[in-house]
Length: 265
Image (cartoon, rainbow, N blue to C red):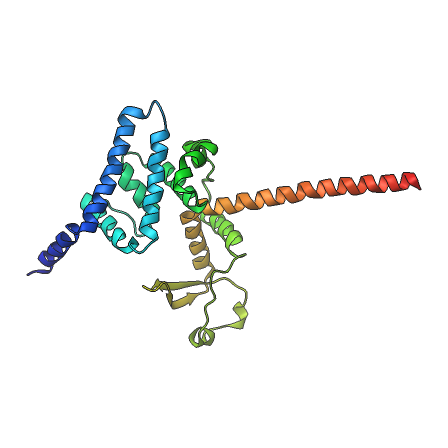
């Protein structure tokens, strides 16, 4: 048996697996619902579209959380191969879900729906409240227009650095890392090449201190997490706005009190 024959045989066995069949039926059902909406209900109401996006969020949740997520993700990937869809290695799961459900007719429309799905996930919307949240935010197009565009890689890196440097999600330490430490680079940024292991840990292969590499990594992070970064920026703006408002009120109260004291004197 040749390698190609063996590969095709193994792939067919995988495609015929119950998980793959179930995932194919689920995705095709959503795709049919999308086609019905496009041909019969688009002009009348967006309610069906919002529900499909809510179902997309549920699908994403099922593919990433729970005991069956690994098996379901296998079925999902088999469906992608069966349909002949091709994605970049950097394409997020959210984009793949949107692509599978809405097809590939209009990349701009896919990008808009993808943005809404990422906002729903990053803001932790419950599936049953997705439709209402979209309405509250002014609709799908309004959510999409809230994104900033046209930024240069350096600007993306600076924005990502501003958001990320205030948090620490893990601390790496080993004798090998300490052996490569140069005190001249203390408090400077660096990037590492990591591999995600099956148990959720990462293996560290090397650390790169090049500013070009750091900026490139931060710029890439910005592109892949744009919605989440904009949410953090918006929250910071609201906090700063409240602080400024409270400061003005406090100053006005103090000024009024001083005026009353002076008049009494």
